[in-house]
Amino acid sequence: MAKKRRPQPQAAKPQLVDGEVPVVGAREPCPCGSGRRYKACHGRAAAQAAAELVRRPFEGLPGECDWVALRELVPAATAPLALREGLPADVPSVTLATVLPMAWPALRRDDGSVMIGLQNDTASGDLSRDLADVLRRALTAELGQPVDAGRAETDGPRLQDVLDLAAPFVPEVHEGFEFWLSDAENATGEVAASLERANAAALPTSRLTGVEAAYWCRTPEKNHLRWVMPHAEERLMNALARLHAAGASGLGEGTRLVGSFRAHGLMVPVWDLPSAMGAEDCEKPAAAFAERLGEALADEAPLTADERRARSGLTNRQITLS
Image 1 (cartoon, rainbow, N blue to C red):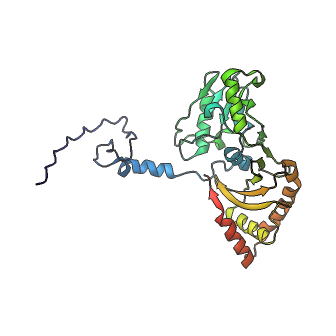
Image 2 (cartoon, rainbow, N blue to C red):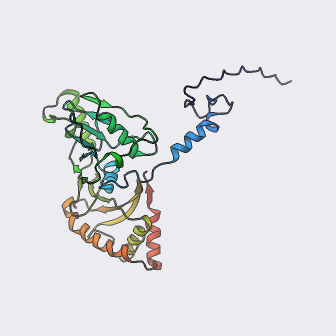
Image 3 (cartoon, rainbow, N blue to C red):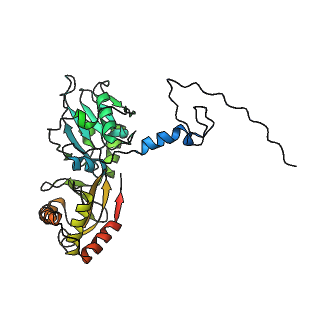
């Protein structure tokens, strides 16, 4: 004979603060008291909101391709930022950094200057809005203190609203993370050890000067060129396929276009390079490739059979980072 289930006492309906439903585990009862699991009740709307990612968070900013590169490709780099309304009197400068110590979202230095970390987890689906919120709070943070991540208001300003869009975006790539400290040469103890560990993990990287947003890097196995491009994906893939089918997609002897990936709404073609090929060696071949690519982008004829096969091969080697 089956045992009768003992009736379970019903949980008291929680008191909601200002009508807001707190976030709980997906399988837990929804705090609204509906009796349904959170994921099937208020959690559904929260999941939908989180899924509404801004595909190109840096669109409209000067140097959008370099913003993407600093977010996804470059270990150590900085870039000065200009604000639309100008800097507060007690903030001498604002600098974007690829990453800050302890992955801090931002830091207010002892001299009042502000550093913003780009390579951080975003709290919402809009990286631009999250960074603008961190920047806003960093401008008034206590001196010498890091700024924690927070959840930006859904209608809060974005970087496009707070930065001076007329100011050029000029990244500077560094060999290491000495820019973290005002006096890195005299660092001692745990600070010096942390800096040494960070520098040891950073792949040597350089930004090409003759073309926009192309970054050379050295790995233990081989060198690579990763080039963030602003063109629409369909046009770019067709153009790359035309060049690949014609044997003109490389950057010189021993180089090979191996594929591409998507990052923040932009395409990033990747080339394998010989281990002896440095950043300076890439300058002329990259400039020549840019000319060939421009011609291929302007070609609106249907792809040939060979070009379609080339495109299929390139497409199969695509990945999406964000």
